[in-house]
Amino acid sequence: MYKNINIFAVLTFGPGNNLTEAVKFDKSKTTKRIITGVLEKDAAVGELVSKLYNSKTGLKDAPVLPLTKGSLAQTIYYHYGRFSFATPGWWTPKTLAPKDTSKKESPKVPATENEDIKYLKWAEAQKIPNVFVNWQAVKHPDFADKKAEVGGIAPFVKWNPPVSFLAETADKHLKFLTALANQMPEIQLLNVQSEAVSAGLTRITVQVINKGLLPTSAEIGDKVRWAQKIKQS
Image 1 (spheres, rainbow, N blue to C red):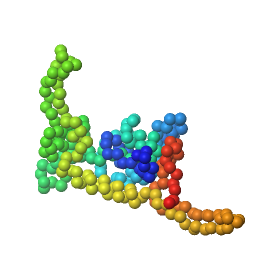
Image 2: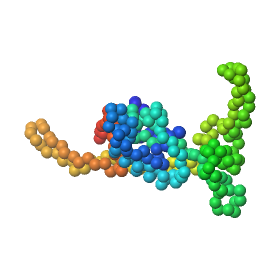
Image 3: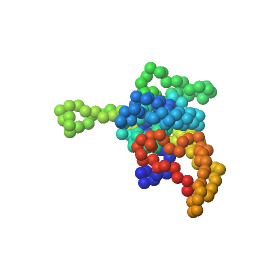
Image 4: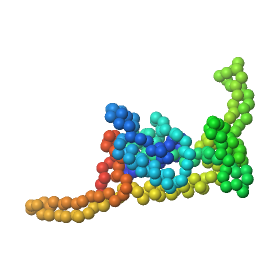
């Protein structure tokens, strides 16, 4: 990425979420030497992109997943100086598969149950295989004199959509990415004029406007001094 200066923003699919609900501006986190919060102008952009994401994907009941320190999404913003958006892309729905297809609504998972139980009930209703490994005793070299067991929910299954959900998930995010691309900055030069000032010297005046909805670069780019200035070629 550091070898390609024309990157406007980065979208990360992973265990982080600042799209279904944008990160709010907190002045106390942006006035110190080490910035730990989103700058004010970037927070405003985040609000716009969040609304775009929610309207284009139509996704509901997203999990709260703050971007963790040292993650790719955080590095993109605080070190690379670009807009950084993150989403898990897919998460376990809050409804089970309908037992009776004649019913319009799917039965809801009880709100009192924890997330793992919700997922297991949903996976069972959807008949998704291999999501749980039965606990079994193993010989562990670090606990030779103790009983050790392994098992539980299989790694990553809660974050990876089953194959039957892939097409729908991809289509929703394609709509968002297409809409986001259409909102990107578009520099246009207007009212170009030239006038002779003296022998061999000409003054050029031009009006530069951004026809896009989003700014040409993130505010954080001015802080990290890595984002390049816009150049019309």
